[in-house]
Length: 555
Image (cartoon, rainbow, N blue to C red):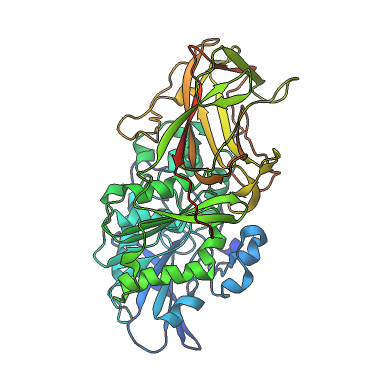
């Protein structure tokens, strides 16, 4: 475990209602629950799991939830987060945080295995997170579950967020008894997708989540100290990024347009890059927890697992490869399908920014102009730069956008840029969408960039997605105009004729929800003084939008 930094636990199990292991068996109608089952991993450490299985004795298909949140702690999300979109009746009291509900799965012939990951709660450690060592321990549990007397030998994985991120990591190893995975919104690259958005430190969710993961009795990985010690993408962060091309197991991947700055980008990249012959993608525009536990979607999960864990023909092989919700407004949208991600018939069109007209134009403007705003939003005058366009005919923007700005910071040696796209109605009002699992007034899409991090990685970048290298600082000469590209995270939105798109660029977070609400915040800034966006001849600031032929489908 060279390279890790460790510290004592941030919380003890006792402080969060944990009890020392007490192996026992409980019974409920049609169900046997084996509590605190000891599983020995290849490293010699014991992890503790709970197994929920059918009482009839027939072999069941195991589905594992690998969790840092405590297997002892039933946590139905609809009761904890009322604005999450999860109705209380959608889950049973046995449901643990972000994990499959035994109350649903066991009566359908499945065994649910909920594990406390190594080093958390009473499982032996030390705890490391999203690491190769953790993945190997997970693989050991998969092999254990696949060889138990109550098991049919075909193991599946399910769960949201951390319970997905670890699916990517263990599936790289292709354990022999792993038969299917259901990644449901989970990042794949910890540095780029969570810790440093466009190179800007994330200062809200990342510090919050390492506290949530840190209940244990022994040493835990000190993610705070490691983040400070590794400001650039290096071998440490590479060890916490999924090796997606090595995944070959059947996968039903679910992503959203609404979890930007956390899971949207990584889940879509996970689907695109895995090598599985059998893989399907469902992208929605709603709240992630509500979508996971929605009874209609639970039935789709069961159809997938029936196909690959129980050998039942549920028609999954005939599913469209990609199924996408094209949003129109909050919780309203249409469905369209595609053969791959991104869809092959996407047309990437450039709209040019014109600071004089505050517009996005289909052609370069004829005259030079400058949009200036205060980078901290605190001085008199504009706090942002705005550009608008109106669609003359229906259009659907689906995929990654690229924003190329010609900018200068006359009073600073670096600059942080924040960008957001909003949909506007025919009367100019902003139309909000679900955002970050709980909010209802989010943008179409967001993006960030610290200009010194603007160097692209040519091996990872594609025509539609410029991936930043984050290996070294490029100079940002004070008072000189530089070209900087901002990755606008993937989205899917329909615009009718007369509706519009609003681009906002500023030096602080676009959305500012009150604390202590947790979402992607960036309060450690390098900004000072004004920013200037140059447009027109010699400075072709522009946005490249992914346009699909507008679908006439409704429903």
